Amino acid sequence: MKKSMVDVAYDLMSTKKKAIVFLKLWEEVCQVMAFTKQQEEDNIAQFYSDLSLDDRFVNVGENKWDLRERHTYHEVVVDTEEILIDEEADDDYEEDDAAKAGDEEF
Image (tube, rainbow, N blue to C red; front, top):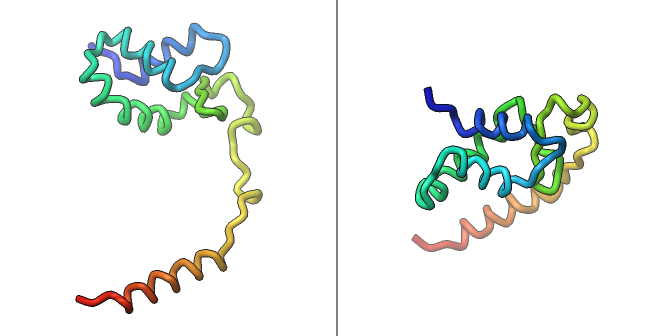
């Protein structure tokens, strides 16, 4: 049975010792799967989505990917308590949209 793109990526990453830039990983996956240029263009977005959703992989920053098993929980989990949300800015944005909608003629 033919392997999926992320399974090929997992096999490739298993042979490496450190994180790899997404485009380099994609090039290697394309080589193994013998993709044509058109197939590369057609599949890159799907590969990125699959990589992002696959629990075996983790984005370690600067568009570099690695195997999650090589990193501790605290290295790969984002503490959402540290994310600041400016709710006033969101309110201003919604008010601007409402004002613009009232100015439009139909």
